Amino acid sequence: MEMSLNVVVPRPRCEGHPVATDPPPVHREAPQPSSGSATAGYRTAKYSTGEWFSNYLSNLQQAGTDRNQARSIQQESRTMKQDTESLALSRQAEGTRLLGERLQDIHYWKSELQRHIALLQAGTDTLVGLRTRLDRALDTTDTSYTIAMDNLNCRTRRLGSDLVRDAVEDELLKEVDLIRRVQEILKGTTVQVINQIKINRETKQTLEFDWSDKYMAHGFDERSGRHNNLSPDTRFHPSSATLQEQVCNPSTWTKFTQDNLAKAMQVELATNNLRLLVEQVLQDTTEDLRAQCCSVDRAFSQRCGDMCEAKFQLENKLSQVLELIGVQEKNIGMLQQAIHNKEAPLRVVQSRLYLRSLRPNMELCRDEPQISLENEVSQIDASLACLQQQLSEARDSLSNLEDSRVTLEKDLNGKTQSLFIDREKCMTQRRRYPTVSELSGY
Image 1: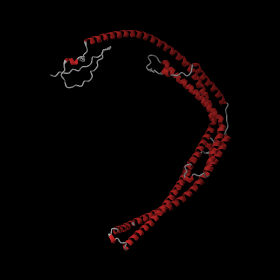
Image 2: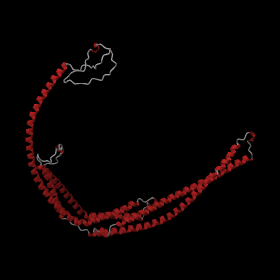
Image 3: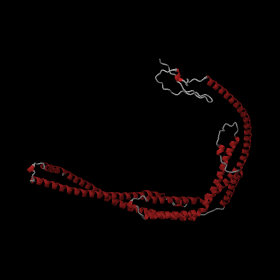
Image 4: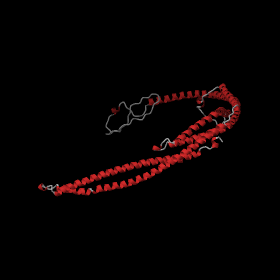
């Protein structure tokens, strides 16, 4: 008689609220006959009546505790809401009043800064009018210096033996040295004007930075003062208070602007006392630069003429070498064919000797045919040796011709490169050399 199997698990422990757990998987096996005593100490997955009653009482007790705690929190919340609303309104009103006072201070100092910025700009414009010609002349020397240095740098890309210290390079180095000395003279003549303009601009920039900061601060504070609880453009910025770093206090803030204004007044006074005259310096430097420019151009013309002549001779010699290379290649081909033509006779005579070596007994005689065949082999070997020697010499000759060709091509390429650099790059660029009027600052 077979009996149905029930899934049985150990009785769970009830601590606090009962927790329903899924029974562990049980592998079913073939039903076995058993008696009731075999399941002693086990029960089905259902809870007992005592467990149900215990769980019910525990839920009632927990619900009562939660209700009392909720009523206490609701009372505290109402009180805290009223207190925080009152404090927020009073703080907001005080912040609005302080923002209005701050706006008045910012506006006053911003107006003072703007007035002195205008005075500094007027003084700077006066100085700029005096140094305009000097600036143009100095900028023009920068162009001259750039051309000369570019010529020198381009000529460093010459190849092989063409990388030579020639007359052109000497004149270019003289030109670079002259330009540097002219620049020093111009800078020395205008150092006071340049320094004063620099001081004016730095001071003006300092005032502008201060004015700009105050302008932005005025705008921010003005927008801040207009914000209220009904403003639609307010947003949450949780990190605004924690990330902001205060850099000064009100007294330091005022002293910073006062110091800037005091320095501006000193600069304005110095600007009114500054005057310079530079006509003779500009005339002398212009004449010296143009004279050296002509010397460099003459050296370039002479060097390009020499380079063209050398390039023409190299081209003629290369043409001759190329012709000889073609002839020698044909000669090598002929020798190779002659060596190839000796292969058939050599195979024939070696085959004859091999077959005759198979003669039996006394027939293996060194007769006249045998001697003739051996001499024929020696003669072919000697001919092959001569042809191989001649082929080797021809190949060596071709290699030498190829080396000469490569050398000539490299030299020709170097001459072509040098001629391109000097005539197409350097001389073309020197056409942009500043004129007399430009060097004079007009």
